[in-house]
Amino acid sequence: MDQGLLNDTAVCIMAAWLIAVAAHLLRQPLIVAYLVAGMAVGPYLGIGLVSDQSSIRTISKFGLILLLFMIGLEIDLKKMLRAGRVITITALTQIVGGFLLALGFFWMFGFNEKLDALYLAVAATLSSTVIVVKMLYDKREIDTLPGRITVGVLVLQNLFAILFLSVQPNLATATLGMMLASLGKVAFLVAVAFAASRYALPRLFKAVARLPELVLVGALAWCFLITGLGSRLGLSWEIGALIAGVA
Image 1 (cartoon, rainbow, N blue to C red):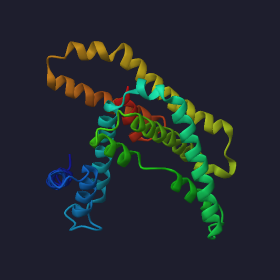
Image 2 (cartoon, helix red, strand yellow):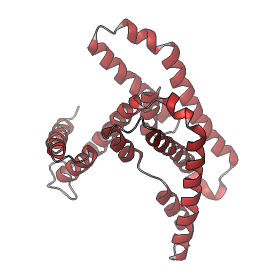
Image 3 (cartoon, rainbow, N blue to C red):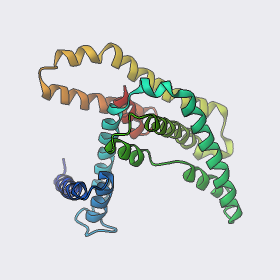
Image 4 (cartoon, rainbow, N blue to C red):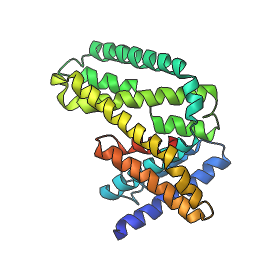
């Protein structure tokens, strides 16, 4: 591993820890502390302790993967499915309604060349899964009914984003087949993850349960196996990490 990446990682971890401790003492959300720490050591709004773009991309990617995997571990899918109808209606209402309102707003203000209004409307419709779920996790509300509905809506938003990103390079010639292919990739990844978690992982982890280091290494291996598979399928690493954690 490059020495610069090691140094940059050390700086980021120390800054995140110090500012997170201060935030905890001040009773502020930890996600805010992590964001402030990143800006403080970064090259744009901070003092530039970490300035190498390659290091920044690598550290941020690993951070998101591990954060979403940890959050996925806390999500009780059975309880979420019990509120499936409420989640579906809420998500569809929010996505469709938010998209149409944003599309009209941007069109009214002159973003009507090519597909400008469409892109801006999609961006305005979506929420930050990482920030919202992390705040629910910190407040220990992720397992409440409102928390499960919120996470469910975010998951459906992610599926909508995946579909949009899969067709956005060719929106002029987008086809139903392309959208169905994207849905098929997501369904395949979920099926593989849950089949393995049901039939293979319990035996493997039971065999090494008395060796904490093997449990840790095995959990990380599982996380990066599913994220890597998702990447090969053309999906984001982050959605793969969330699926790995939930599974």
